[in-house]
View 1 (cartoon, rainbow, N blue to C red):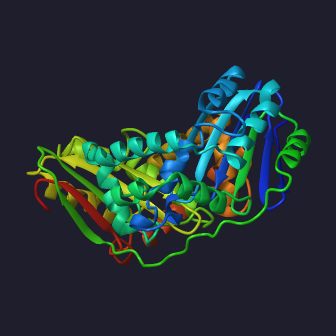
View 2 (tube, rainbow, N blue to C red):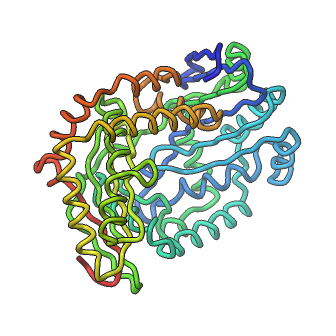
Length: 415
């Protein structure tokens, strides 16, 4: 954590701008969240998959530049960039030397306000999206997590984000241009900047570039509750892939940091966790097992993945469920101390990368309503106690809590 780091939040019209100035940094990263996520796509032929296509086409020309000229302009100032569609946003990330930040902001603003969305770009994006959609089952570990999301989340937030063939084929140049104009608005957008920049200068530059940009995108809302239960998809294979999902605290919940620590003890943070030790090492039931936690603005989900043979899949799931029940008894002092060190180390190391920090502060504004400094996040880790963790475990892993679990299975036979 660098000395002299300062964090400021202002508004550029309807859009929050968060700037973290790192005086000794020679680079800067922009993370721009635009409210064009998969949850806001139409259903089926109404445009399911348009966000995935838009994330691809907006890089293919903007302003007065065609695709090649736009790419060359970014390359000329050494911008490392990427665009990704997620459930709630399209995220644009871009990093360059601090001297080129004004030019980078000009180019990114062209991408947001004046994307070309040419017919050639649309066809290329469609071909790529259809190939991706068609290959989803080729990665069963990823695919089973998508199957889990379909039953563990409420609609429309249970989509996998890659669209449908019907929806992708229905997207046209005109429909994508109209969707971008309607959805990529300042209301619902968030911009984070981290690096060796002056916050006042960044603000002044963006106020000039975004003058006249107005409006708010309609935010998708829950249309159906989670289905939960069990989902099975047959895939002829020598392996069975399983994913258990458990409701978890949302990011603004005071228990979210407690949950992060518990997940690290149970199934994250390398090979010293309970699931790896008990399910894989002690019993040899699976070749891979681990746990992750996604904390959102409105809900959270913990996911446990395991890959095993069809013959041992049932035993694997029962062993995992046994470890989940055992968590209600609490954790040991050694487990607690090891997890604290690991969580704090990973927090600091990730936080010292400008790309991770830019995404983190923009994400904070969306999920909890304000940006947190790295020092504040580390202080939250330091404030955790073993008594608080064990009290949380008694509730979070009680029989009633575990009844809300969902299970997705991809393999030759159901469990």
